[in-house]
Amino acid sequence: MRATRYGVHEGATLGFGPAGETGYRAAAERAAAAHLRATGVPAANTPALHAFRQYLPGSTDRVRAYVSFRSPGRTSPGDDRVVALDVGTDGSDPVALRVLDAPQPWRLPFEPGLR
Image 1 (cartoon, rainbow, N blue to C red):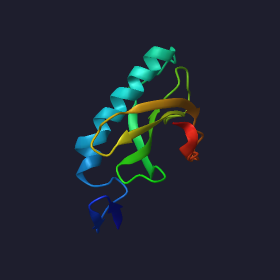
Image 2 (spheres, helix red, strand yellow):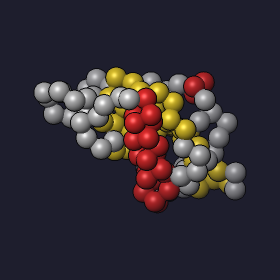
Image 3 (cartoon, one colour):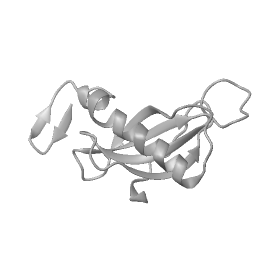
């Protein structure tokens, strides 16, 4: 179940239904790629949305998401870094916050105070 400003909706998935696919997935990935370019952080692959972690405290339409990518020169398979960002479930106002190391298995922090 998930609460929104319009009431409670049942059947929400970890991906938050179609919003995750058509709404914030593309916006999050674009914002992460732009953040990496702007900060000069190299990536060996195109950043991809890894996790839709949690709604931000007090919000029913913004989530903390992690867009993963692989460091150049990484010898083992899989991504090892993420861009933490906040984004509306409809893809509005993506805000890239910072780049984090993401050791496998994923142990990603939830840091609601970053924004």
